[in-house]
Image (tube, rainbow, N blue to C red; front, side):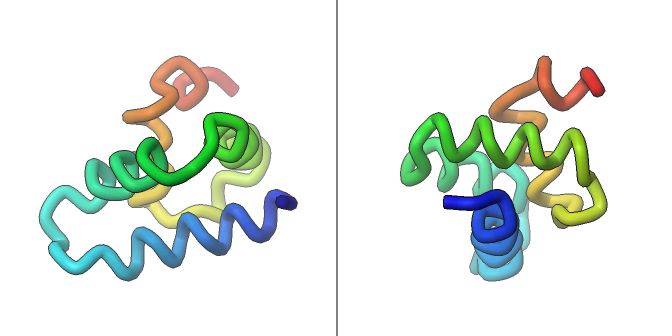
Length: 73
C-alpha cells in the first residue's frame, strides 16, 4: 500500500471519529488495533517528510504511537 493511500485512510479515520473528544487518542487506538506496524511506520516516515499531508489529529496520533519519530526530523 503506497503512502498516498495510507495518508488518505488515516485522514479519513480522523475525520470520521464519532466522538470529537480526544480524536488523536482514538485515531492512535484505531491504528494500533487495525493497522500492521509496517503501515504505521510508513505513515510515520511520510509524516516526517510531508507533514502538511496529514491532519493535525493524525500527526498527534502518530506522536502517541511513535513519540521518538515525531520529535526527530
